[in-house]
Image (tube, rainbow, N blue to C red; front, side, top):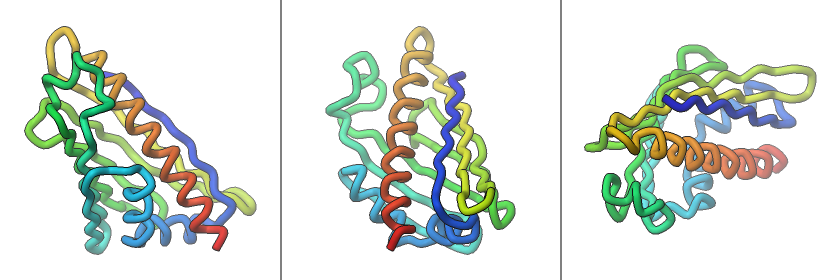
Length: 155
């Protein structure tokens, strides 16, 4: 299992960051900036579901035979409070997932979003390498989300 911990800081209140994360237009802007092949966003009450299809072109050859030409990632956030959610990333049809939490903590004029995930891939021999690859991919995706979020909140 590979642990991923990421902190994203915004110059905004926790309520403003939560409202941004609850806005389908923001989530779609993030998908566009991440250059996914296809993506959909559905927010229903306290559950946000983001499905993205990424090209397998930049996936190392050892992993491509497991994921194929495309990798589908379904991210589900179940908000358990105004400033916290359980997060699950699933790769449909593949033996991998990531589970964890997202927490918003306001301090002064800033809010820090902390995402902590446990990435697991149940494939003998190469599972650890694929876990690290997925953790890197998710970490990069969160960096892009942060860039879009900083711009979004400064409008």
